Length: 404
Image (cartoon, rainbow, N blue to C red):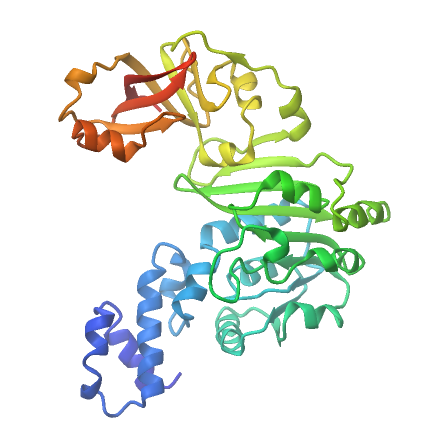
């Protein structure tokens, strides 16, 4: 980037981008292409302050267009994947290939674990941006302008292959089946297992985990939440001489003969990952509540997505409100519970609810949270809650205070 363009970006880094765009005529010494690129950099920097804080202090760091920035991993989740692979024993002696490089955030962080790294991306503009940023960071990453499907044909053996399939169709609509993602990894699964020791897949949290596990021979599943929202579904597959049958079964849609470890992770929580297997979930003993006890427990979003509905109750000696009400209760306070904890105050009187300052938590209840707020004209509160749930065969309303 030339000095004039870099100076313009730094001078206007905190300006309103829309207002700046209307002032195009003031900057006749810049070409239209340079001016548009500068706006893209200013907007990208502003949008990624929370998502990519490490890049804020790097002068001349380049940002892609809005959609690519929106779809890339955050610094938090990229670091989690780095730690995941480090824990799995990856070393600097190996080879790493990212078949869907995108903006290159995951490529950059994972490359630090390997001697040789390859970035593959079909969009030429993203290749240019990634190569520039890799150079700034001193990362020796080989950039390949190609689609994943094309590059697989020339792929050298890698210790790790990483794939983050696009979750949108050609019209920009979201897709909810693994086979509809791009690239569709299922037809290439048998080939990929001959090309790597480990395959790490980043999938949409919207995918049905039980269906995905019938299609892919995962050794580990990591459900990663940030600020109470599930952001990533990670599947780690390990291939060795005994994995051929599993891969062929997965490709044909037959359930593989394995029971992967599931890690439900909330990155901003002091609680460690909740780890279980699907077999443990099937065999777990879960007692149904006969009443609302003194404390109510809501598992974090990662645990709910993982489907550990019975295991969480068994581990923490809790009662479940109902089969389809994923809230739990007990008369004792479990401070180490991985989620929110509430102290039940009393059953709510509908006549006295109007105008109260209460946040709303709804599970398996006839009305939504917004409908309840509107009906009772509720104001928001940080600590006081209206709990609306089905319990013991009927919908109930309780007042509660948050304690954890």
